[in-house]
Image 1 (tube, rainbow, N blue to C red):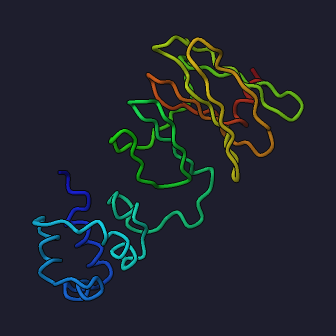
Image 2: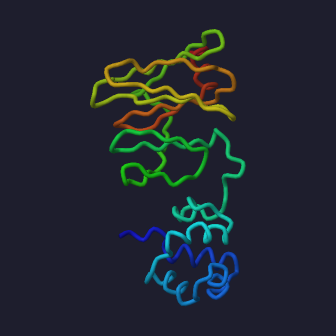
Image 3: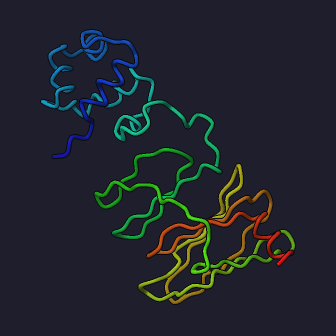
Length: 204
């Protein structure tokens, strides 16, 4: 079994909060020998202790499990910090406004890293009244296709799902939209900045 919380994480959190092993043991109602075993990789915290451990360090259980963010950086999360997680097994797409620990089909998912749209994945944008009409020129076969697009503003997200053998096109309410993301099942996540795209269209 993989160690779901490493001893190094517990030790780092404890030291950052200026606690001794005995201090932490007292707060969790366990022995200091138990804390020592955890930190030396000779044992695991019981699952019932996850919430109490997280509370001692003023972090979420998700942050505790991930070991990647041991301070709460999501208090003022914004949609502009959106992250997308795509399951390689079923294609399920999960959205978060910040750091998260996401699992699907037993796989821990990492956030997709977005690249600026390239010639291989061009997207056209038209303004129609109060909406943006987008079309992505892309193969939409069963093996290679765009699976979704999402329009992001500071306080909202609009998502549309695409399917193989269909068209990768859709409409989004234009108000406040800053960026549009879209995902190719083979090449990953891409984005377009609305302002740059519209200026390029006018000057091009």
